[in-house]
Length: 351
Image 1 (cartoon, one colour):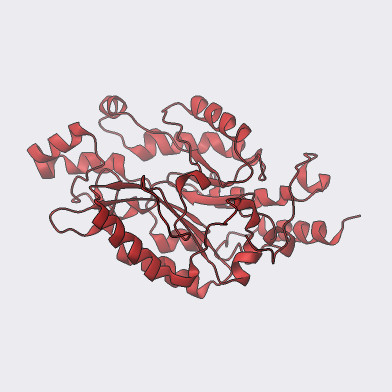
Image 2 (cartoon, helix red, strand yellow):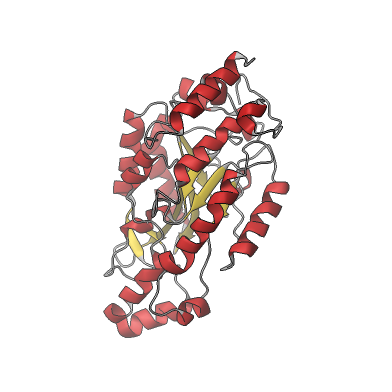
């Protein structure tokens, strides 16, 4: 006989598995799952989330390889369409990603010269940061039970002045939405219920090499994101398995289901692109692997991929990741016999 928590999760699972609407999936979670530590939940995210803003005419950005930069200076517009094919990893806007259920954003920001503006990048300049961040804030304002993890992974051509400018903008822009880092350093003290009850909707990871005094800017060590750095699906999955086996249950964790083309790989496939040569083969291969995973202290937390919705019928990425959360309840009928240990947290405990 199911207890109340198990029954609620079972009903939620039966309802969501036939749905394609994940706009409010966090708010729709049963109460028992909202009390799970945020770093034990399975959360779908995107890799190089803002590359959707790159166009064929975008300029070459400072995170490009030295070869690409040199070619860009020599041949300019001729090179850009070729580089474009390997820089874009998402074709959905920030708003479309949010409405689809994406709750983690992998961000890279550079100083655009000579304008001095801050822009998202991935090999090429995408767009200035102000509009996408405004879209995220507006979404959260109208979806009060949803939260997002914003992970600023890389900074290019930054000085201390630009870091201060960006930090001031983020702290002012999101304000009271920002969740402070737990003073004890244990992320497992934070749950969705606790965040929403306190009005927090944004976890902001700021991976700057310099120390930040503001507790609303989370350092890298509290949300590791190991990078497979391979073009082999088999090597990637082996890497992901090793990472999950050794992850800490006290921090967040990002599982990167991505293949990364090397310059030589790109040269070998001059007429192809990242979607056809990396994202599609990777995504088709990992869907069955993802279905076998479980969330929790030694399981997946945030899971990211390229082109998350390129083929929804064969690669239902968001649904697959979100529905993994059913395994957080001790019920063999729901779990398929896998016992997974986790600790319910008091929704009103102070981190």
